[in-house]
Length: 431
Ligand code: EPZ
Image 1 (spheres, rainbow, N blue to C red):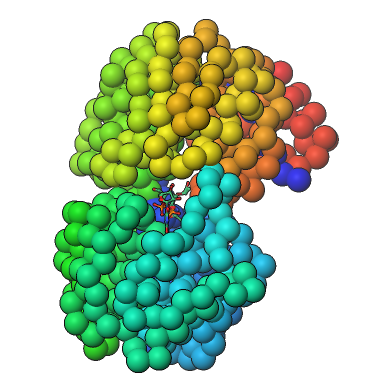
Image 2: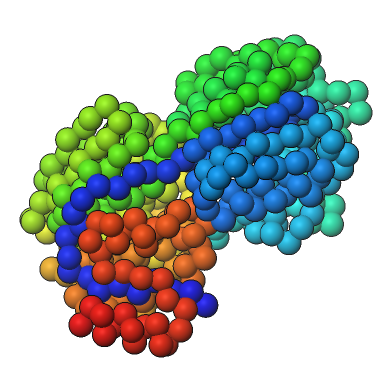
């Protein structure tokens, strides 16, 4: 089983380039099903969840040509099956986007209920509410969502009860070819929502208002092919921002949209770190002594829930007490027990954690329990005295491309290992 091993104590220094946004690319890949023309997607992150989604497209008869690790040409003209059911697709959350896309074009879809990181119950009732409002019969049978709109999809006025990234994207996918004008209120406003809307509009869709509380989709008859580059990943960028601050380093993070990082920059500045913003880059210089601050995760433009574990690790090394409130998911503090093995002092009560900063961590063997928790534990290991091993790194590889290699370019003593021999070799090398 692969692990990350690292020897902490070295401030990260240098430059790192951010890849494409995983959570935008997942919706865009499914959206390629909505046309019979070629769809070229550029700046795809080379991560497991993306590769699983591309494989799933082939399952239904689409062709997928990988031009390089970050570019794919998809053609769905020969899709004849609207049911996807393989063991891999069951493991990822974004499988649900195939429901919206297959419904949108073929008015039928049979897709397994989604998997994904165990950070809460993660129902899809708002997705189903949207599909039903558009005239679809939806039932859950044999672990799958079985959806069909025998009379085609008709525009609707939908009010989401919960701000949901997935439901917002899924309703856009299902309604771009529906007859009439669909209005969706109380939608998510994340950068990846805007990116999926821009992608669909580049195919001839008529979507207005993405990034605001209300999205208007005027159905069109047909969508055409496109070439589209995915936006930079806000969360990968934020993860490196926290890594720079926590290790007291100085890192220039390139290929970012600073506007998307404002809530993360604000918190790191409150802690006393220095941040320089450029057109497409951001530089973070970690202060030796960092102040505590309070964080509450909220839908965009609030502080992103996907940055909560990484920020908590940074706060755990600040001087003083911070409070972190997780308002999006009900079970996103599982990493706290792992961090405690490294000497952190965090108490969790419901969706509130109280973090008493400590002078430093000591290395330990810890488990990545979900994607962002895994990234946070790597940051902790880079700050810890001695050797840290992070197990279950498959979670991390679902959303971070070459995480260890990018950290190595910043001077980190980190390696991916898969045997005791490799662990011994690493320990001999770093001393
Ligand atoms: C997306 O998950 C992301 N995943 C998550 O990123 C991210 O944490 C989340 O959005 C919030 O930003 C992908 O894009 C693949 P939601 P999603 O629907 O769509 C509740 C990562 O680390 N809800 O916005 O599942 C839900 O339980 C992953 O990259 C309903 O109640 O999130 C949660 O409490 C982790 N009913 C809240 O809404 C629904 O039908 C937000 O969920 C849908 C959601």
